[in-house]
Image: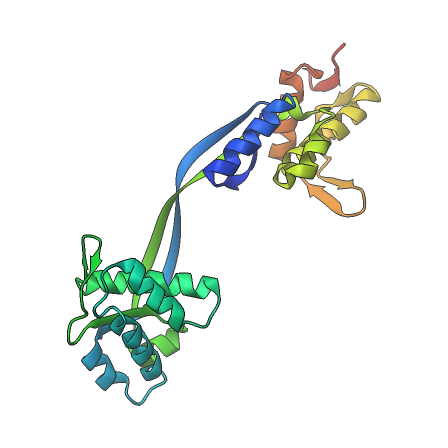
Length: 253
């Protein structure tokens, strides 16, 4: 039975899987395309049209601000030079700078201002397009457009073999360095708690499936579904820790 440890970037996933393998736990990395969906309201249109439409609203300052950023593209040779000018103008955090540059790059494309590696001068009446946070009522009042932004990226999932993790004395130590592996340790602890109960004597499968709640120390409480407990029991049988016969479970000698 595989335990999903989590989703990470490819570099960390490979490193974590290698660390698990080094202590005898089989692990695999599965690459996949991850999709995030963001419904976003946009202010969008020619600058002259937006200025006339929103002159008396709270949006006008934002529209002028984005226009001033776009104006910085005048007489620059490359996006790097434009980026430097924008960065000097923004006083916010690094995250804000990064987000602003992403929106501006989109605006450059919409206005046909990117040609090869160079940036062209903005048109006389450029298209201004930027996301604006608003609830449904406010967006309706301001007549904002809504778009569904879908971001596709490659991510990785790390899976580890539960059988290899059970009674693995080195797993807890590894979790001190790789805290993300704690989930595997927790599931292994549930399996070990089941083993302790089975070691007391032959026991009914149904009784083991009542172990829905388990406390590890004072700070961790594990709640397992019936299906999860069945899967753990199957892993114990498959790896040779226990044998199941006629609804009874016992330690395999």
